[in-house]
Image (cartoon, helix red, strand yellow):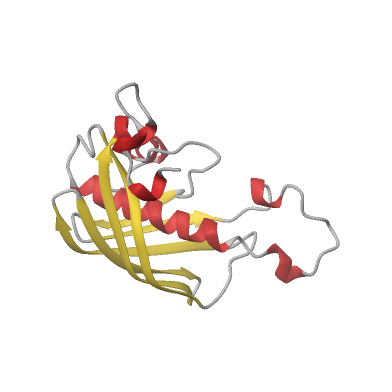
Length: 171
């Protein structure tokens, strides 16, 4: 699988400006995926940054690097499920553990994510991986646990109620 951007959009449950994977560079069905995310100075996160800041202030937000990694994991999982992908289920990160940032990315860099499936159990996926800029590892993820839930329950469809949501999401 080396889908074009349209295929990425068909699999991911997010849209612009939150699509944070530009292309799949390598894919081994049900095992690993490598993706690329180009960081550009025209992204929304740089919109209100002053021109005279020191270079380190232009580091791409770590939360966006994690989101991009998570989207890469979703692409691996959904692509491994065949042409129907998740169907009416919405994939989401349930837990990240043993994550360490060891570097940064800046406008002009290309972040390369490598995600590996460790185990798939029904609507749960257990994955690990790392993100690099060039030869430098900037993020390691010891464990990403993803879950898939019915989209109507997660998005608040007519049949959903607060009682349908996990306790952590009820207020």
